[in-house]
Length: 412
Image 1 (cartoon, rainbow, N blue to C red):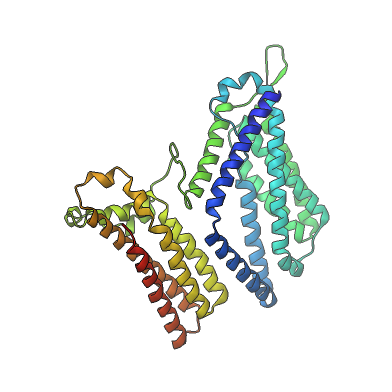
Image 2 (image 1 turned 135 degrees about the horizontal axis):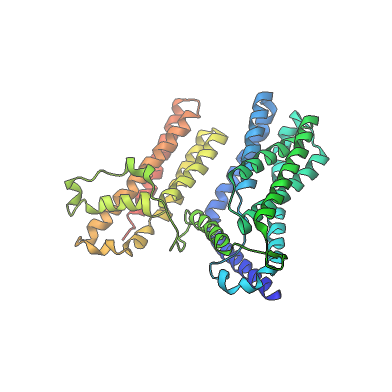
């Protein structure tokens, strides 16, 4: 029994070390700086909004936040750490996997409870106006979270995922979170009904797939190793795809869907595109939009800057944010030339290096000019449309692109 527990404990430790390594690259000093600014701006504007918001706005935001949090609780995957080879090598120790499963459920439940505490204090300014907190409902919610994780675990280990069970989970979790803040007799009755429903669903799955009987009419614990391994593989694929938006990760064997939604802005193929001078223009656009995650690198920074512009609604802050965006984006895009040049197709065509570099510089200039203009338009829309404000924002766009041009010229 200790052997199988040690195996999964070692896998858990290695995955944590891997995620910690990637986190150091994701949460670099630039991103942390932006997050701190955004957090400060959000808190300031949140407190101002609470003071002037109507009852309808308060309820709307609270329900939207509750829906999002409920979806997070339901969609979070349970970490089984099961691999394909376990179907062969760990089969003799199958009956001892129960002990590993208990730790899995406990760990996931603790994470969800911590997430609820954060959610609780985040929406407390709203709920202190529209409702009160019920301690009984909080205890019931913890029970629902535990049942939710139990149900997900049993579906993974013993049974295929049932859509009606997932919908039931979402409804029960949503109503339960609502009842924590808004005390209502009918809601509490619904909570109890929901808990009974989740309990029955768990029992149903256990009864139909959790245990099987052998020839001696004795129950035996059975794990669907292949299905569970496929589930955990998809869990890690989802994580790698997310991390790959920030840093390069090994995506061998990971199914990555082509981004068809970018086809509209991809240059059309014509005979002019096949000339020596224009060939790499198309290739770099294609790589930027489809193959690499550089496009998401720019988009996430645009989102952060957009939040800052929307939060402060100040031309000087908007100008600094746009210039900062240009600097932070371009210093991360320029080194990509070396990365792209390592691809095989980069060396196949007999094209001079100067043409390749020129095409890459053109791509960067188009990207920086387009994104800074979009941010400028967004900043102007949330300004008072004064002449001075527009001049400041336009000047920031010009300065941002001058900074980008300086760094782009260093590509070689």
